[in-house]
Image (tube, rainbow, N blue to C red):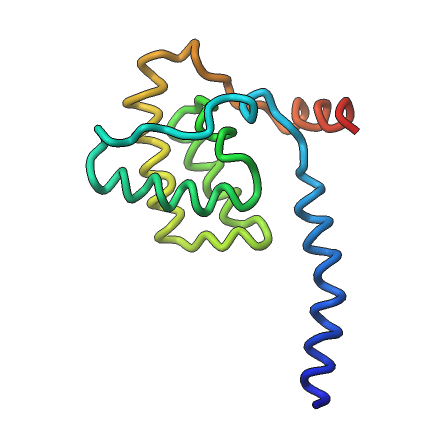
Length: 136
């Protein structure tokens, strides 16, 4: 009985923290307004599976349109995926992080690099903070 009460108390204290963490990054970027799906039918089977992991995991914290419409270099994608893996509640383990990175790198090379003007460059933390200030 005491254990159940303690668990409920801890949960009730953690929920507001979780909600604050999620809303703290709640900003609309230009990329969020673009397409929210990729037709991966022509991608290799392993990349099609990677797309599913990417869509499932990355949509937990931000729109899936954000990474779909952002162009980055391979090292930038690697750094970005590692950063997202360390976010609270991302639920992205090492193998899933590698799968997501492999998909994003493949997609960058095979879709975005062929038409870079159709995509947005990633924004710096400072640019994102300016957008947050304008939107709140």
